[in-house]
Length: 488
Image (tube, rainbow, N blue to C red; front, top):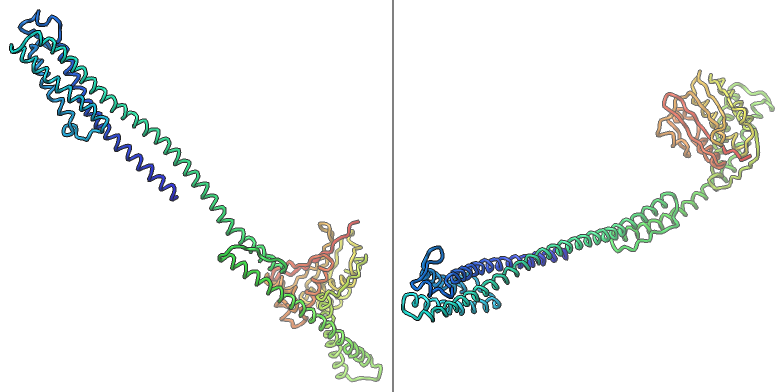
């Protein structure tokens, strides 16, 4: 922009100088044109008074130039010639003539002075104070001097006019050159601006894209990469901070994984240790409840039922914690084999039917004929089915229904458990698949641990499937999980 501005100033200054020069040339051309007009008029007047037989035919003078006597014409010529000399001087011209013009003006002044002297002699002869033969020769001389002065004035005027025309042409050419130069400079400036803009945007956008990609990797749990930002500005500092954050998060993530592994190992160990005494408590309670060692009274029977119920609930909780810990620790190995999905669904329905009947809930099963044998860990799939059915029966009020369906959809088997319970709020539909999380209905019943759905989700995902819920408050819920179908 500075270069374009300087170029514009130079062009404007050059144009202004040419305009000033053109004004001076036009002023000179005007002055020299007037001078040429006077010399031409003098030449014309003298030409009318010059004739070889003038004094022979008209010894007393003949009328000439529109009827005026010759002496009157000569007197007019003398007056005009007297004005030629001052017209060549700076005062009458109004400007200082250049050196090349001054030579012409000097010669015009010399010849016009001689012409003036000759005309005065001719006038004296015509007044009867000179030799007429001499006057005829002087008239010829005067005409030649008038021609010379006129030629000098014309040459001067023509040179000035030519200079004016040249300067006008130069102005036109300069305009074209300046226009092309400005267009070229503007195009160059635009290209330079685009290039600088591209480089500037690249120096900003590329580091931001790299930082964004690294942050996305960090968000997805990938701490292996680093941001390579060479900028020595705020973006460079930001990239360095992202790298430090990445390293620190990687360290903390490793520590967290190690802690989680230890936690899972501890829970698995403790759950295993707790199941042994619990099984003993349940076993001995059942022996006493069956009166194998004698009769018991009603109060003792009630206490034994409480012991069995609490122990069974605690054992279920311990089993869920143990299974979840094994999954998190990567200690669960699926025993994949073909099994009948229809039989697994029917078994799950049978397991919850007694409780459903007691609660006045109808449980129905509808499986497509082409859904039968699938591949997977049958025990784990039965566990998922039972968890979903148990939850559906538990939260369905009396008079409601639980419907189980199975079908092939888009190359996978889709199993759904629909109930007519209270439904789930949108905020709860993702949260209930996390450990120890329950919806408001589950919290209100004070029953369950919040581990069943979390464990089911991990078991389904271990099989390569998905699990989700479609629900709306007061309109029930439909839990769906999928299993991939092996080709062939």
